[in-house]
Length: 351
Image 1: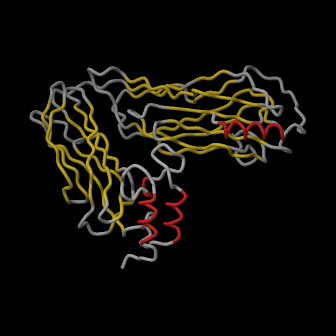
Image 2: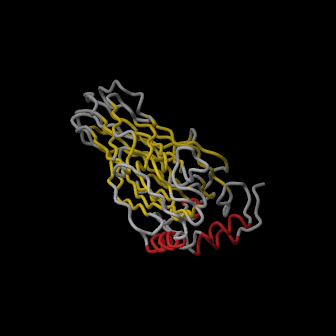
Image 3: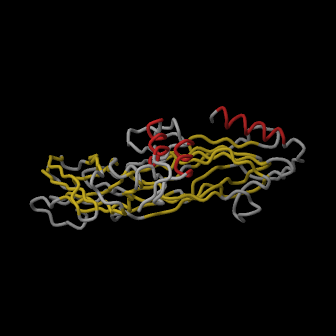
């Protein structure tokens, strides 16, 4: 827990001392992931599933601080719903009024959530769901790779009562098991295409990560091409060992590219002897090319754009305020260059 979050939680709990603690008979308190086991025997690539994290049999709960993580090689975060307070969500936890302290998903596959009640809220007793989270399977192992046992891990959990005392509890993690698929003799696939931003200013660049998997039994020479709509951006020819995965980083510079929405997709040519070609292409979502300084994609540069860059100033990937769309020059940080670029183009609109 960060010093800021710890201090906020302690202050909140001390403010709650006027609350009457009403003991409730219960069993051992558990923070658990449900369902405990999710299994996929067939290819699950592209499939989504939802889990929930629940606090079970708790007495006098007044605040929690939970950290949760997953393996980003196999799973991609899609969305979450926080079920706090119980006044609003019938299956949730804590009672109003509450103070949100942390609620952030990070690119390294972690989620941090911390919330506390404050006076005159009563303490929470019983069981309830803290949050639900939806994932997408982005890679399914293929033999001779082993089965993937992916832990959905509650790696740091704190529960507090109104006296700011810790509530003893245990954790129960979840597991997603992907059974390795039988290998094809020759099979190469594009398993993911992901742009570093969804809005790019005209004449500036965006990084596009393309994940390529050799799902066959032999080393292959591949040729892969990245496209924006029907226009080829770049191509690469190289070698990939059997049962290997690589990420290729393409840099798309939008000089001379017309403003508008583009669909980014990659296609790898079938290798000799390949019969499974359905997975030789993969399409990302839309990316918008717009005028310089327009970081929210509305076709104009105004105070919204300038303030957005200013508020994210100094951030880098992994920071809570980081937004890649505000990194106009695509150098991995939001600094004066980005701010002045937006400010100097203030008032421009897309004709």
